[in-house]
Length: 133
Image 1 (cartoon, rainbow, N blue to C red):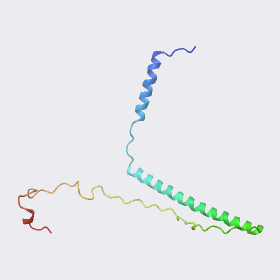
Image 2: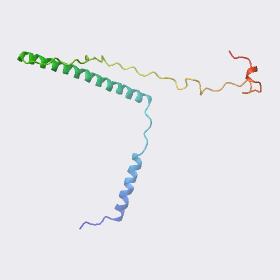
Image 3: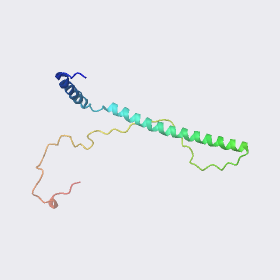
Image 4: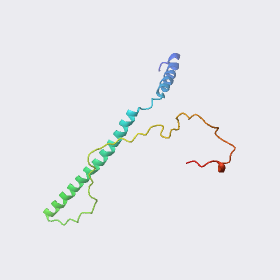
């Protein structure tokens, strides 16, 4: 027959689990600009690696097909003509150009307002105002 747990153990376990669950839900600080740039470069490098792997696979398939046709011809077997496939495209060397960074305030929306020389509105109709150049 198992021995019953003491009352303190029964209460301590749920309290400990609640404490761990609260600390696990803490927010991390947002990544810095440098970390974002590194992540973007890593994503670009991963995409390039995928293109390079596809290119190498294409070359390998071409070599296997050429070897099969040569072996069939040497053995005197009739091999069907190979299917027309697009040529393997070499992705070239990896080149990463970071995206252009724009200033936060491109339109001047947060610039301090100029000192007012006149009230913002008048009772003069718009048709009677001088034309702006």
